Length: 91
Image (cartoon, rainbow, N blue to C red; front, side):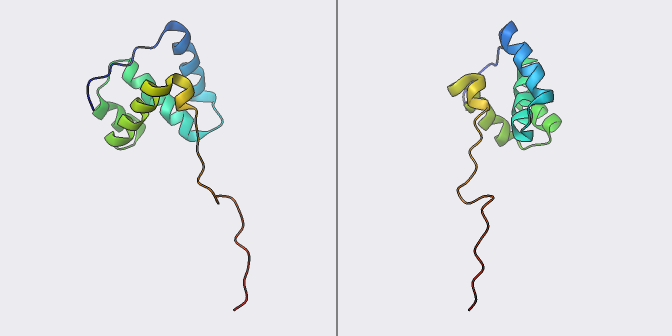
């Protein structure tokens, strides 16, 4: 991935600061933490270590932010079929 520097506006900083602690979805909080680390000039490797994820996960979060801003980080696509009960079949 080419160089992309995360620079949050004052308003975005406040939003990220809140959502990294209070968002109901754990994965969204994780993404907000990663963006916060990168905004504070940590390297991708350092951000990955702090977030306890792989560096490729940090790069995916950066792409989400680059392409969709904070709204892009809030998208949570649950695979079809998750949470649905599998019907019982008698063979």
